[in-house]
Structures are given as C-alpha cells and as structure tokens.
Amino acid sequence: MKKYEYVWLDGYQPEPYLRSKVKVTTDRTPPEWSFDGSSTQQADTEGSDCILIPVQEYKNPLFGDSLVMCGVQTSAREAHSTNMRHSASEIVTDEWWFGFEQEYFLTNPDGSILGWEEGIPERAQGEYYCGVGAANVKGRDVSEAHLEACLEAGIELTGTNAEVALGQWEYQCLGKGIKAGDDLWMSRYLLQKVGEEFDVCVNFHPKPQAGDWNGSGMHTNFSNEVMRSNGSEELFTGFCEKLGEVHDQGIASYGSDNDKRLTGLHETQKITEFSYGVSDRGASIRIPIYTVEHNWNGYLEDRRPASNADPYKIISHIVGTLTS
Ligand code: MG
Image (cartoon, rainbow, N blue to C red; front, side, top):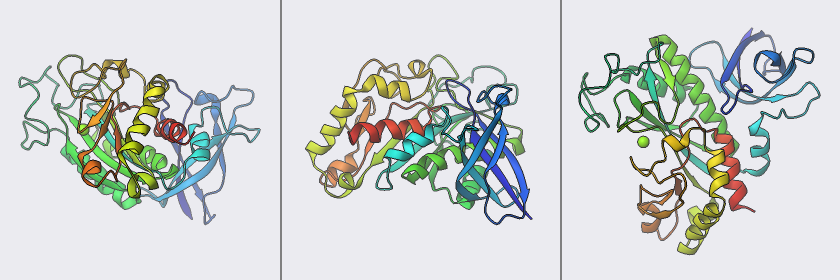
C-alpha cells in the first residue's frame, strides 16, 4: 500500500491556505481524487465536489511515501477559478529560473512571535540578523529541520538565515519553470508541518509587527536563457522599464498588505513608486553587481513581492510582461 499526502490551495482570499489529506491505495502513481469544495470556499454545498489533479510528486520526508502537489478542477473538469497555477503553466517554460527568498516569522500557537512573549524585545534590530546565541536567535531548530525536510523531498533550498527581527527567518528556494511555484508552495507546506512538531506556527504576513521592525518579503530573483548567456545593459534595463510600465499590476499580484511593508524604509522602495538600479536595495528592482560584472549576463531581483505572495501569480506577472 502507498500513502500519498495530497496538497492543494483553497479558495480563501486574498491569499489561499494550504490544505492536505492522505490517500492510501495500491496505485503505483497518485490517481486523481476529489474533495469537499464547500469547506474550502471553492464550491457551494449542492455541487461540492472539486477534483484534485496531481501535478508534482515529491518524496515525503515526514510521513508515508509521497507529497503530491495538486491543481484544482471544477466538477465540470475545468481549471477552477482559484487555480492560479493553470494560467502560469501555460506561459512559463523551464528556461525561466526563479530564486524566491522566503521570509517569515515563527510564532507560538497564540500568535506571539518567538522571543516576543514578554512584549517588544529590549534590544532593537541589529544583533539578530545571521545572529548566534540563545538571546539573539529563536527557532533555529525549526529552520534547520525544515531545510533537511525540503532537501530530502527534492526541493532545492539554496540557503537559510536568521533575519533582521528576532524570530524572523528566511530560506531561499530555487526552481525552474512552473515547478518553481510548486516547490515554493510545498516548501511552505513542509515549514508548517515541521512547525507542528515544535508546537510553533508560521506567520507569512508582510508586516506582523508595526514600527521600526523589518517586514517580511519574498524577493524574487529571475532569469531566462538570454539574460543568463546573451545579455546586455539594454536588455536588462529594457526589462526593468517594461516591468515598471505595469507596476500597479505587479503590486496587485505580489501579495496583500504589502503597503505596510513597502514604505521606503527597511530596504524597500515605496509601494507607489517604481525604480531600478545596480546594487540598489532601496529600489523596486535591483540589478545585482553579479550581472554587471559578468558582462550583463545574470539575473534580476524583483524586491517588491511580499512574503505572502502567490508564486504562481509572480511567475505569471514576470513572464507575461517580459514575453508580450
Ligand atoms: Mg532577507
């Protein structure tokens, strides 16, 4: 018997939540399955069946045999309106590489951030980023167990670090084509499951703590074949200009409550403004020095996406804009 853990995205707005259930079967590959869409805001009670279409399979590092990322269809066998993967998969190819820098806060089940149980930490930001020591770092065991789980699953995390605020962390997740989006969603799923083992929750909100504390983003590094191997200054600045022309559409695709994070402070550009520049961490899009030093062959970093953004929407916006 095989144990498949099916994972999908529900219909909640503005951002979906991850859902899962386990199928036990003699099937050697995960079959299509169904679920009660009336319990996930994807159907009404009368026509409640939604279909789970397996789209990506991972070794399950925590339980059973496989993790199965699924796309959702209606009972009429059409892509569900909440299925952002469907439209992204139609325009992205594997020549597009994405490196997502996922930031997040770890919290207790009551919502308090790890290390903030007694209120605001006494010491301001400064000692926590890439810090060490029990007073400077909270939740390292979760971050490390998550990294191991993702690597075992076949999800390419390229690094992790403690972030600028106490209890805040980051990991970097690299993928090609639509699988980049699948991997990021599955890495979020694994993070929350690993957290269960430590009785710790994950807060993906872009600004969980108001005031002079960093928010959480999901800087998105991206490139295609020509950017990597046949680039030029004109190509890179042209791509930045193109993304700037549809800045508002980008912001609409880059996560809710992002206005609380993109204030012009804490290494961000204001949400109402668009800019780009070499090495500029106060810009909307940074042209990395790596790209310039490699004779304009490399990648770009879109610094606007929030930590709660849907990677499928990010992929659709970037690829859709730069290939039209
Ligand atoms: Mg970071």
